[in-house]
Length: 162
Image 1 (tube, one colour):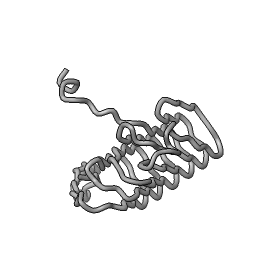
Image 2 (cartoon, helix red, strand yellow):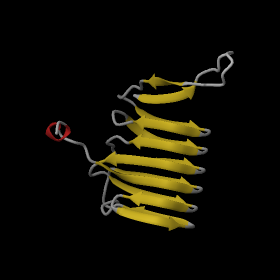
Image 3 (cartoon, rainbow, N blue to C red):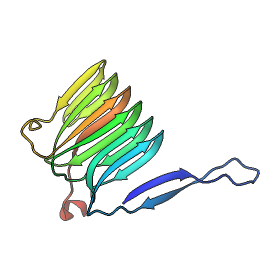
């Protein structure tokens, strides 16, 4: 399931208040999906854990984005083109990943590594990336601020209840 939030059509009332309402889109989990987000995105939470993901691309500005990636087979590409601010990408525990950043980045977290600021190009990989058959290949072009890519540790039932 993917949740999309969009502004409601403004009313003709005297206020300019534009509340938001969520929209939910259910995708068939039995087929692979290549997901493209075009144009600016803001306050997007994409819980893709139940899908077969072929690729994911975001073209345009991205602000306050959280992506929960699914388990996978093979190499899956994720691309963010343009500026990105406050982006968190969480992959399943034990799944290898590579992160390439083209352009400057501030406040970067990749697994257990934290980098305050870096310019030009950066290429980071999890320890097992080169040997892994199943892995994520993430590329970010343009500037990025507060970018994180790390393993998602699922809680067991007993941990969740404490």
